[in-house]
Amino acid sequence: MTTLKKFWLIGIAIAFLTNSCERVIEYLPPLPRLEIPLNASRTPALASQSASTAKIEVGIRQSINQVRQHKGLQLLQQNERLAQVARNYSRQMAEKNFFSHTGSEGTTSAERVEAAGIIYWVVGENLFKGTNINQPVKVAVDGWLDSPGHRENILRPFFTETGVGVWRVNNTYYITQLFLRR
Image (tube, rainbow, N blue to C red; front, side, top):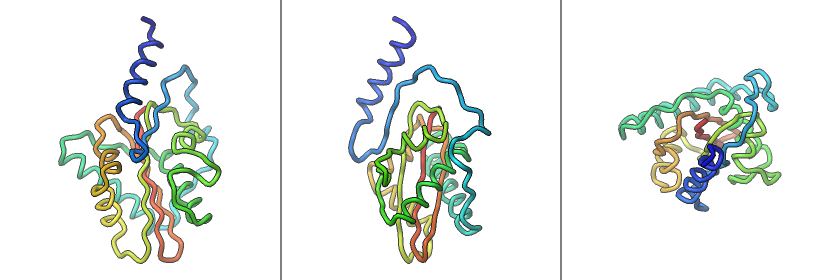
């Protein structure tokens, strides 16, 4: 059996095991591609909106890694390019006043990650929107842990990288956390 056929069979098995409307996991089987250099991203860099939103991004990464460590899982490494995709999406939801895993143009998390030139095997996405909350990190992470599909993303052992993007409009926070395995 050729290597490509083995990858496709593995991909089909993973897609079958992880396919669900609520799980928000998308899998694209590996195809031969060239890695796009870090400085050649097709999505413009978007720094954190403010010092306070940057602090929330760090807090979410740390909280998620504490949960993973407690469960004996590998810690997720920060991927700044993935965080840029997450920030762009949080900003888009805030500016266009919607909240969905499907973008305003119909894009999926996988398509948004791919459009940024990030090559991956599997990607997952958790979203949070909250208004008038004092502790957005705790509320978002606790909410995700109480939701089976979001909790599953957090505890998937095959995820190795993460990027968190926070955008705030008035008293409303939009938070996107992307999970990835290259």
